[in-house]
Image (cartoon, rainbow, N blue to C red; front, side, top):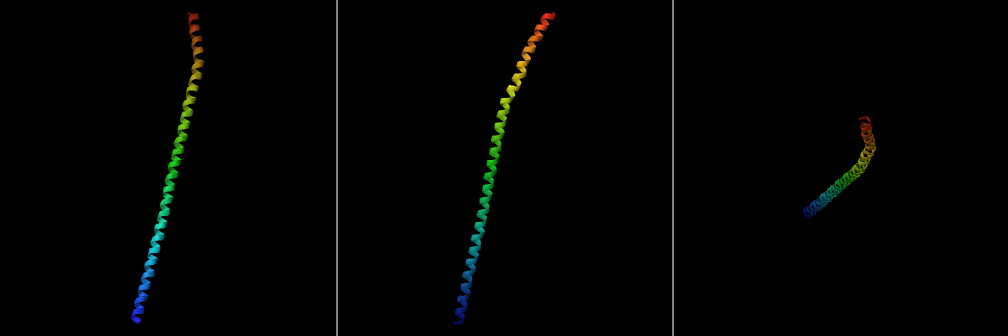
Length: 94
């Protein structure tokens, strides 16, 4: 009887150890899954930030390209009458 009780006790301990190991494995897997989710979320956020920066840069470049022609047109508009004046002066002097 004593031998059977000890054997049953050893089996019980083995079952409890196995359950604890399974629980620990499940806990570790859960932690790894959570970490992977955080990493994935970080990658997505990073991609969104990069996309937004690229979009902002594109808008700034478009604005600059619209401003640049207007800056060039103004001096050219001012330059032509001056150029005509020079031609008139040259004709008069000759």
